[in-house]
Length: 461
Image (cartoon, rainbow, N blue to C red):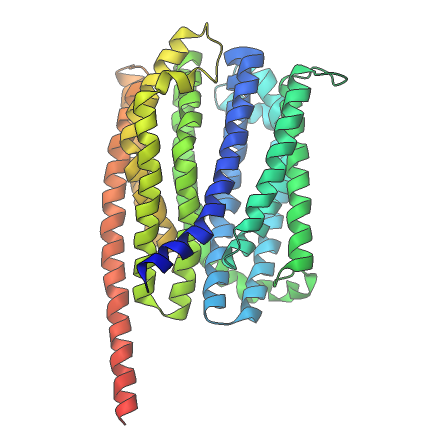
C-alpha cells in the first residue's frame, strides 16, 4: 500500500475514536473539577472512589471483554465478506452483554455502601460515595448497552457514531453537572447527588441516539430472531471474550487494589493520585483511540488475508499514537502545577504539590503506554486475546502490586514513588508485547508467502 494512503486510512478511522476518547476525558476532567471545587477533597474522594468501582466492572465485563470479542469477530467476518455471520455474532454479543449488565446493576444498586466500606471509605466519604454509587448504578444499564452497540459499529469501521453519541453525553452531563451541583437558577443545589443524576441522564440520552442509529441506518440490526443461536455462537465469542475480560480484570483489579492501598495511606495521597490520573488521561485517552483503530483495521486486514498491509497499518498507528502521547508528555514535564491546580481549591497546597510531582514522573511512561495500547489492540483484532492477557497479568501482579505494597506498607513512602513504579512496569510491559508482536507478524507473513507459492504452483498447472 502507498504510505500516504495508509496514514489517511488510519486517521479516517482513528481520529473519530481519538475524538471520542477526548470527549470522555473532558467529561471526566470537568466532572472532577466541579465536584472538587464544590466539596473539596471529601466530595472528590467520594465521587472518584464510587466511579472507580463502577467503571472498573463495566470495563472488565463489557468494554474490554464481550465488546472486544464482538469487534474482533465482526471485523474479521466483514473482511471475509460474510455479513450474515457478522450479524449473528453482533446479536449474540448483545444478548450476553445485556444479561451481565442486569446482574451488575442489582449488585451496585443494592450493596453500594458495603462495597465502598470494603474499599476503605469512612465517614462522609462513605456517606457521599454510597449515594453517588447507588444512583449511578442506573447509568450502568445504559452505558454498558451503548458500549455493546459501539462494539458493533467499530467492527464495521464506523467510529463516527460513537463519537457523536459521546458528544451528546458530554453536553448533557456537563450542563446538568453545572446546574445541579451548584444549584444555578431554578435548579436545586444537590452537590454529589446532582453529579450522579447528570451521569444517569447523559447515559440515557447517548444510548437512545446510538440505538436509533443501529436500528434504522446500520447494516446490522438487533433482533430477537437470533436468540436460537446463543448456544452455537456464544462458545467462540466467550472463548475470545474471557481472556480479554481476564486481562481487564487483572489490570483493573490490580489498579483498584493499589487505589485501596492509597486510600488507606491517607486522603491527601488519594486525592493527589486521583487528580494526577485524571490529568494523565490527556495522553492515554487519545492513545486508546488509536488502539481502537488498530483492533478494527487489523481484524479487517486479517480477514482479507492482506498480511503485509496489516503490518503497514500497525506501523502507522504506532507512529501517530507515539507522536501524540509524546507531545503531551512534554506538556506534563513543563506545566504540571498549572494542570493540577484546575482540579482542586488553591488552599490544598500539599495535594497540588504531590499531584504535580506524579504528573511530571508520569511523562516518562507515555511512549511505553502508546506501544502497549496499539499492539494490544492489534493482537486482539487478529483473534489473539490470550497473549495480551498473560502479559498484562504478569505486569500487574508481579510488578505493580508488589511494588505498591512495598511503597505503602513497608517503606511508607509518599504517593509519587508509586508513579516511579509505574514507569518501571510500563517499560517492561511495552518491551515484552513489542517482542511478541514482531514474532507473531513474522509468522503471519511467512504464512502469506506460503499461500503465494501455492497460488503460483496452482497457476503453473
